[in-house]
Length: 640
Image (cartoon, rainbow, N blue to C red):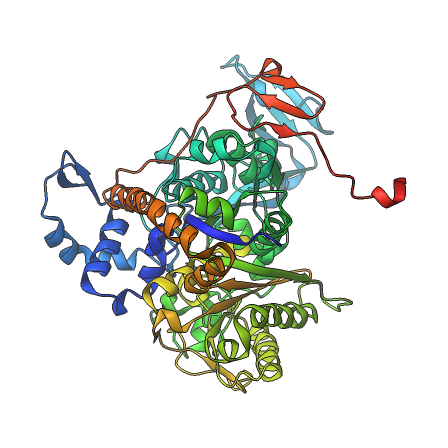
């Protein structure tokens, strides 16, 4: 019997805030929450944004002044809310009104004379350009006089305004680098440390307890990014440094790799010795990694897998690239969409409009991580179970005209994910107790192609009005992390019973396929127990399609009851009580601004002396469970 991959923790950060304990989800549906829960999430955001902190039992503001927290939150509620979700791009990452670039110029001497200028000796090129005459400076020995005949090609620094001024930026004031010794790490890795720490801390079980129960080669980490680390501390700086007259650093190349989020988790957060890596699949990367984890747990080769992605693409070059493709909702398109004049205020908050009349997607940053156990380990350790991953399907598009255009693969992944869901919950629950977390980018092409896929699948399976949500309307498109955003939101729906609606859209576009679909333009409130499963859909450039079947916590519990029996379930729930207390304690610390990121630089580093080998096992000092060397022969019939 295959092991069931159950979700025992999740964490991360996006434009809506901290993911663990559903706070980012709550921000999206804040107006529908009870006052106490809304207040908790405002507390969490205010701490995250550096506006307040609890010290010695008292709340203080950013300057250290004592304050009444409830009064402060009432006064600052609009500031907090306006500093989250999709909004006008802020200048904390770069100034969108002053983006530097070099313009190539050719200077020519007036009336055929030479071009004369002075230059510091240390800047003199090794190879003297043709036509240059170098003369010692009579008044300053550190300088040279240059007389250049003919023309002189130069790069002059200029500035431009960004055409795109909307983004799903992390909450205003949040600085992941300040939470640990970031050592000039690229922003994507800073988000990795925060997001993975959030997921591990929210587990409610000390990681050493987990490590003591599981062989090191039965733990996996699949995490990465779609674009790699492209800011100046990563590959961006590697490519830019010489052109900017600066030096390449020893860190830019290694820290720029796309799989570096997994490497950081292994080396500085978990000390993992097990399987590692990432599947890079553009905007479907998270689900590709999740599929790898599910296969490992189902087969029994792994008992614990951390899955995640971290994407930090809010850089001038990335905006420029997507805008040149015509993929982003830039200011000009938004004005045209809403019939605005140059002097009118652009509705940046509503820039992303999935399935409505729209102008392109909205770029966002996010890091999302989930922790999966096999069902037996989860019950043994008393882990809190938020749901289970039934299956993840991946298919390519076949022959294509445009590498960026959609194809046929997503029809297969959605149909198979829906069929796999039916296998678990049955026909009736499939038709009346499921909904879709659509990819829903906000582009004209996506609204027609994805809605057609969903409508076809719904009709095929006899679903009359399949609810469809698209959360990019609230937090934007975080590329590799997009499906991670969708997954943690789905877990929030089962906790609070509110499916986020596409509230940026007043009406569906005329070319959207609607048959058998109920595309939600408002938040939908319902009983969480009425939802048995959700299907998460993801589409990526190049024909990377993935769809996942995610099972509700109550469905997961029913499955575990059938497999393990009532006595074991009762023992599990008793063991879980301690975990729930620890989870609540972490949430309280995070809300109060007292939680810290995990970053174990240089700790517990082992060398070759830690390894002891025997014919049937390999032991590592400090780890209780050895690595088995009794590797099964999967090709036994070929060898006999």
